[in-house]
Amino acid sequence: MNSSHSALRARNLHFSFGDRPALMGLDLDLEWGKVTAIAGPNGAGKSTLIEILAGVRKADRGVVERNDDVALVVQRLSSPDSLPLTVRDVVTMGTWGGARAGKRSATERKAGVSEALARVQLTELASSPFNALSGGQRQRALLAQGIARRARIFLLDEPAAGLDAESRQRTRAMLAAEAARGAAVACVSHDDEAIDAADVVVRLEGGRRVS
Ligand SMILES: Nc1ncnc2c1ncn2[C@@H]1O[C@H](COP(=O)(O)OP(=O)(O)OP(=O)(O)O)[C@@H](O)[C@H]1O
Image (cartoon, rainbow, N blue to C red; front, side, top):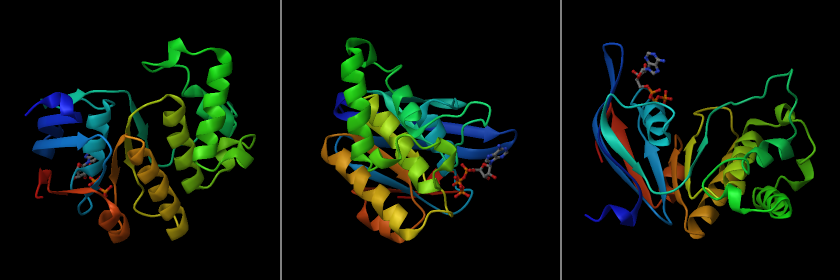
């Protein structure tokens, strides 16, 4: 296999919490232009996998090869009350780092932030406090942060509960749009609709990939 063809390639991932194995030898490829749903029962290892793919948790064994910047959209993030951030602030943070950040002028960055806000339909809430957003809106703001950074790999840990059907549907449409632009998207999905809508479905059970 030529690894340069996939956006992300993971091989033989192992991870344990103490003596409790969470991932046991998992292989995964994420392809450009595709949405991959990561499905499976509670405790199967989905969140652990997403964190290892994103690089915020290190596998005990195995390798992850990432062929572009990764945007990680986690569950239930909030900003500290002592550091009030607007939605625009959160999206602007996306322009601070990343492989492509340094090459842009301040004007280009501002335009990139506005475009990212528009792509996730949050333009009207740009000046609102991030903590005042609903769970689904926060998720979209973090997605916009990745878009502003021009990340091309999006990893989402979708909460099992707490988002209404309309909100999930909106996020799903936005992820499909990013994939249509060529991004590689992986999303932990709990509902059948999201799993049915994905281009690729990866199922975990007890820390192993079963399909
Ligand atoms: N911080 C932790 N300390 C100890 N064990 C943990 C920790 N986080 C997860 N685990 C265990 O690791 C295994 C995998 O958990 P993980 O959260 O990755 O599963 P999941 O598929 O995302 O579950 P859910 O659908 O409930 O979010 C489970 O057995 C879980 O109990």
